[in-house]
Length: 74
Image 1 (cartoon, rainbow, N blue to C red):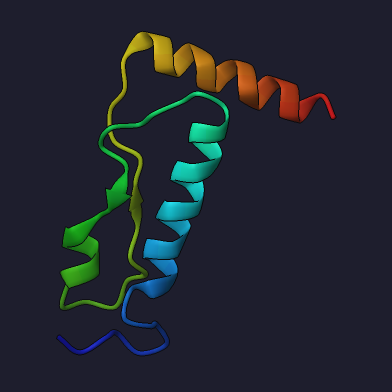
Image 2 (cartoon, rainbow, N blue to C red):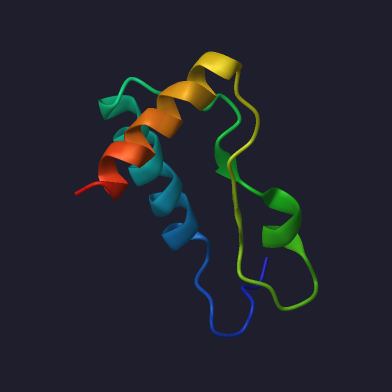
């Protein structure tokens, strides 16, 4: 596969996913569907690969809300 002009081979996106997964885990949060959005990565049209945040249950959504509110108060 040839990368889109101005992009890399996906390493940045994969790194971003890993860093986000680790940051969420440090706060006790798991997003089971977190990953690289493969359709945007494999698109024949120029597009930056996207991070798919995916679905989560209500408990994970509430935990994420708490963490984001605490971070916003800093």
